[in-house]
Image 1 (tube, rainbow, N blue to C red):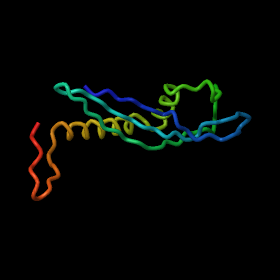
Image 2 (cartoon, rainbow, N blue to C red; image 1 turned 180 degrees about the vertical axis):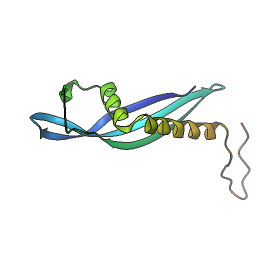
Image 3 (tube, rainbow, N blue to C red; image 1 turned 90 degrees about the vertical axis):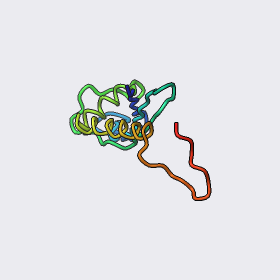
Length: 116
């Protein structure tokens, strides 16, 4: 089972807009998936940014009260379920290729790496 960690702690914010200070409008996200197979940990990461719609802010949360969980929920809502699933599927595919590689890099004149 792959565990996904969404890090949405780095953001771009307007100093002031609509009467509010430090208004988050863009999120720099990092999603890391990890799993353990036969005692060995595997992981893969995707990164990107997601713009947030700030046209109609209700229930403004001051920046010093924001949590990663809150910003993750905003980010995933802005992306939509299909894009969230695509990001996590991409990570799962990368981990599965690490566990069960279909190609390797070899150097002529050097021994092949041991098969695990």
